[in-house]
Image (tube, helix red, strand yellow):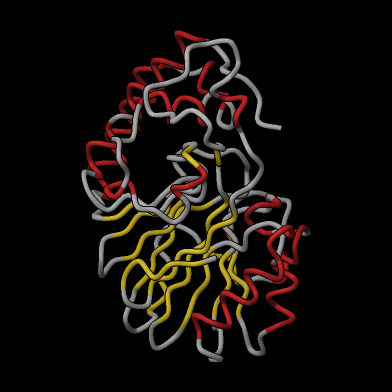
Length: 267
């Protein structure tokens, strides 16, 4: 399923399995959770459709037919010019081959970082990194070495015209099943520290081993460097208001993960 967040910006969403165990593991249910609701940590991808079009990440093979249909609908039968794979992980790259087969004259784009590019045809891709940009007409996207990552091949992306940040894996969080494709400002509650801890303590679990003050400085540097108007997470909901406040909340997330140790696993 998809949603057009801005003219030409389409958000595609794969719900993933019910993560109810996150709020029923013996602790009191968190304040944000509504009893009886399924809990989702989604895979998200984003289509930028200007004079040229670019898809950032592919969702997992479980959503192959859906994303192909969503792309066709959003592009209104038009072409897809670029496919960007942020890193070779199944939820992000799992449909790369199917999308490449579907569209003629498409350019595969991948990080120039790391050394495992034989996965998902990334050795055949246009390799990009810090300082590289693609002008799509309505949008201009730029690429950055990931500040926080869970794979050696990984990149983040920004969009210049509307000041968007796509922080791959970082800034993910669980939410109610009913909140699919809902922007954070449309929720009945504020995005909480607990939600961010539940994701990062499981997926970016290396936070439990870090120098907290150093990572907090890096988070503040991310805020100062990008200062986005919109945050487009790959495992959460779109943030289009109070973005700086929510990004800065990540400084507390790191401290809380150190205090609690590893939160759990995400199987």
